[in-house]
Amino acid sequence: MSMAASAKPAKPLTGWHVLAMFIAFFGVIFTVNFTMAYLANSTWSGLVVANGYVASQSFDKDLAKARAQEALGWKVGFDFTEQRVRLTFEDKAGQKIDALSITGDLERTVTDKQDQKLVFQTMGAGVYSAPANLAPGVWEVEIDAKGNGVADYHKIFRFVVKAAAP
Image (cartoon, rainbow, N blue to C red; front, side):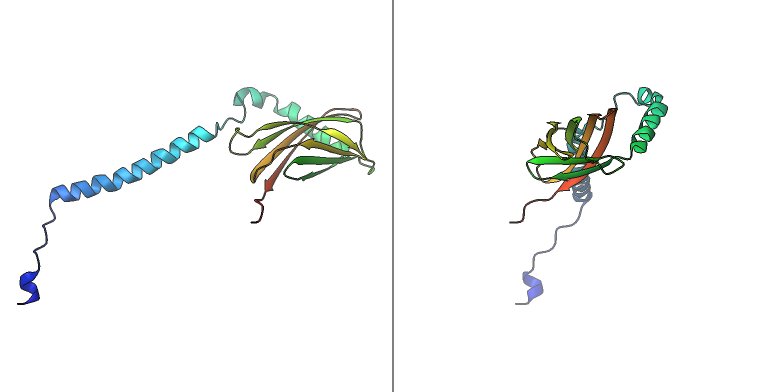
């Protein structure tokens, strides 16, 4: 008996089979795309300012404030551990600045679910520290400092917390 005689004939490829394959292929594509779009939209609001037009009206004032802040010549250092955020302040002459009241917002860059408010305590010699809960990932600290003759010093630090090695 030969091999050709015992083999079953192949089923013909019909239009219905091609249609089913076409629907299955694009069904998977659409499902993945809609799932990714939903997850992207549900995890980050995308809101930077509530009203872009209103925010644009204060541009000149904000620019003048930034130039005045830059003219101070302050050197602001930033450091962190998984439990704390630490700042150091020096004036233009290199003198440590101790008389500041500092608050801050600790935020994830892509979600608002782990945002934290920071209240810094002075540690002396221009050093300020605040407790924080930092998981691995990208973070931003936005600080506002008052004192030493300055009504509002504003600065943003972006940093990455790396996962602990196993």
